[in-house]
Length: 192
Image 1 (spheres, helix red, strand yellow):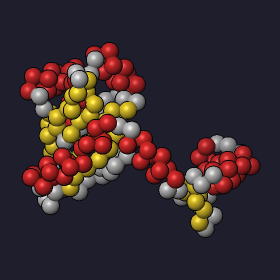
Image 2: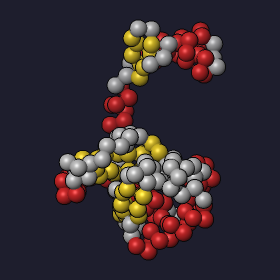
Image 3: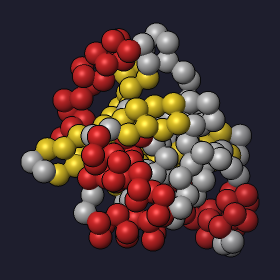
C-alpha cells in the first residue's frame, strides 16, 4: 500500500487530483484503506476471474494440470499470450514442485518460458516480430536468449521437435519443458 502523497509523487500529479481519484476508487470498491495507505481490493479478483473464465482452455485445463502434477511431482503451469506477454492462467502443484515466483495472473516475457517459447514458435512470423519489437528480449538470467537470431534458431528447433526447454532462463537453477496447446491450427496457450 501507499499513501496519497506517495502515489502523487510516484505519478507526478497534484495531491488534490490524486485524492479525488483515490476517493472515487475507494467509493467504487476498487481500493481499501488502512492506516492512511491505499491498496487494491479483492474487486479486482472478481474481474480477473471473469476474464480467466472467458478463456476456453482455462475451463478444461484444471484436471489435466492436476494429473500432470501428480504424475511428475512437479509444478505444471498453463499460460496464454495477451498483449505479447505470457500470463499465468492456472497451475497444478506436485509434491516435489520447486517453489518459484510464478502465480496465477502474473505477466512476464514469453521468450524465457518453455511454454512461452512454444507459443512463439506457433505464431505467425509478423506477430512474432511485433512482439519482439514491442517487448524486446530482456535477459532474466545469464542463460536467457536475448538475441533475435538465437531466438529464431531456437524457435525452429521447437517447431521440429514439438516441445521446448527452459534451462535456467527464467530462474537460475530451475529447468522446465513445455508444449504449445494448438486447437484448429491456432495456438491457444502453452503448458510447462
